[in-house]
Length: 267
Image (cartoon, rainbow, N blue to C red; front, side):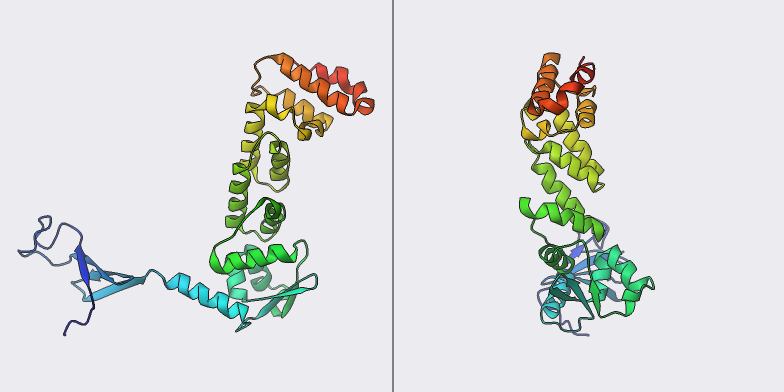
């Protein structure tokens, strides 16, 4: 059969046809595999069977771009998500593939399986728009304003990739003024790796953290839990004592009676 491949480049694997690296002569080529590249196509050639397996590198991206376009134009969409007064159109198969929450909803025999419109609680329209975009593109933009709503919604929808992205974002934002809040937020939503990293930051930078507003808002139990940790990094135990005094003075009327009990935890 005449060759019809344009601009084909063959790369041999397995030591070349003749068994010597780069040698184009000689026999013994049976069973050798090669790589066929035609523009963006990558193929593996099995010469003994006459077959070539092609992998189209852009296929998945192109397919999802088309599905996103179809969603935007409400083409072949089979579900509407109602959030407040807003309606979002989508394809059940895409939502189910991206979210175990939607997979259970659409395949688990629930009444939503047959419904054209599904009402969602616990998520705002702006956040759902970002999550739907991620389902069709694999891309999401996270900022300080969005992450506080995005992480709970992604947790509800069991979208692990978005949860990981949110946790990575928050980890990169850790500083003395927000690390206590991030630790509490992470614990609340079951992000235990982020919770451990935030606590490690608190322990390592206790002197700086104790100067911040978040430290003054700690409950008595939270304060005791913190100052009793063996991992607390302080040059002098007097720093812990001064931090406790500052915490007490922030709300002296209610905290003064607890001061003696708290100071017993200072080493």
